[in-house]
Structure formats: C-alpha cells, structure tokens
Length: 95
Image 1 (cartoon, rainbow, N blue to C red):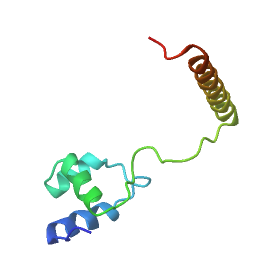
Image 2: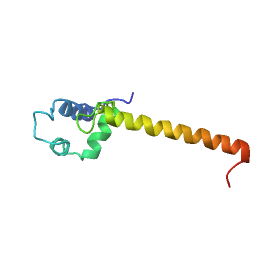
Image 3: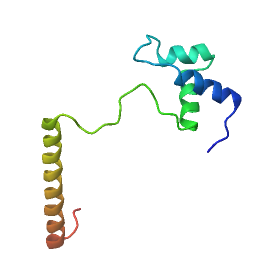
C-alpha cells in the first residue's frame, strides 16, 4: 500500500465526509474546495483504494429480459465457435 501523506489524508477525509445523496455538490465541487482537479481527486482515491461515491455501481443485471437476451447471445456465440472449429478441422484454416 502506498504511503499516506498528510495531504492525501486531507483529500480522503474531505471526500469521505461528502454524501452525494444529500448534498447538491459534485465531485468537481469537492475537488475545487480542496484546490485540486477532479482528476487528481480520483488519482488520490484510487491510490489508496477508496471506493467512489459517484458513477454507476458495478452490479449484476437486474432486468431479467436483458439477462435472458445476454444468455441467448452468448449461447449463439458458443455455437458459432463450435461450428467454426468443426469447419477448420474438416477444411483447414480460413484464409
């Protein structure tokens, strides 16, 4: 783990005390208050593995229709790969 500087700790403390659900400020506003760019804010957070409070959460697909379409597409892809493999075994590589 990288060493924590006093400034990094100040940035992290300020960021972690911010609640984007109840606060109208953006990550840009938080960075400006700290006197740094948004990019630098995110660099410090990444350096110390601080989870982001903004952006899309990484979650499984909640919509069952979208999940089913994804499964169907993957199934067709695997079938096509198997057919291609059989073709190559019979006729050789594609040119």
